Amino acid sequence: MSGTAGRQEHGKKVAALISGRGSNMRALVEAQAQPGCPYEIVAVISNVPDAAGLDYARQQGIATAVIDHREFDSREAFEEMLHETLLVMQAELVACAGFMRIMTAEFVQRWEGRMLNIHPSLLPLFKGLHTHRRVLEAGVRIHGATVHFVTAELDGGPIIIQGAVPVLADDTEETLAQRVLRAEHAIYPAALWEVAAGNARLENGRVILRDWPFDESTTLTAPMAPIDFSRGQE
Ligand code: GRF
Image (tube, rainbow, N blue to C red):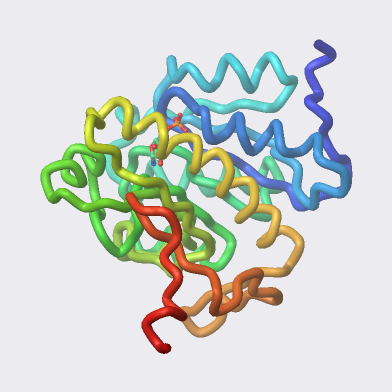
């Protein structure tokens, strides 16, 4: 491997923030091989020194930085260093990908409309942690993932893209998490692509999409096959 993973040289510069495995960051990097990708992951920053995702980023020749939050006296001091690092890396967009730090309103404000996050549920349902367990307990039939702009409200920012998966009868937390993760890996690159290309943007607290690829005939259902609602109108 040359380590460049099909990187585009002229896309919007994106820094990915991780705390662990980094599989979503990897999906973002891999999508750069698509022709015309409008973004480039220029940096991977982790608050956890031994986050596994850092190894992948290094192998790909992507700049990495560790900013260990435990070395700072306050959240603000940690964020100041993070902000400075993002500026040094010349990041134009920030993609949080399993970044397990709550951010202050001040930091979020600085990156408003330029910072994305992925959450493993169909927001605004199941904000917070342990989403798959809570989904199973609640008995819902459709679950999924959401990419949204980051605002001061945790998991509450305007939604860019969602991906839905069925909850199956014999699902465990693990099988459900795997299915949702596949959806995450599909929707995060798609969302970042749209934002980087200027096709999705934040305006007055709402996401404006240039194209809306669905029409009224689209119905997502689980566990049945698609329902033909037109029959009810005969
Ligand atoms: C993902 O499920 C993401 O939605 C959530 O944290 C997990 C991170 O996984 N925010 P990975 O590090 O991207 O593999």
